[in-house]
Length: 91
Image (tube, rainbow, N blue to C red; front, top):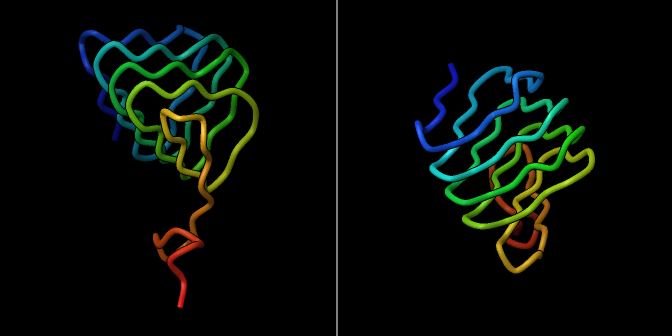
């Protein structure tokens, strides 16, 4: 299911599929597609972006097409493996 904080803004043309969480004061732009995505507080997802299996941490701004990524507020992007462990933590 989807859960959108009452203080978040999601454009009417945005699509949410699977498990999606949008935190307080976050903005999801026009034409965005979110599939199995967690967006923390104060984030911005730019218009036309497509995110699948991603986590967007507090305050991060994301644009473009991305799959299996973690976006940090610093602008750093970390890939993660299907087993839910970041690539840099693999044995």
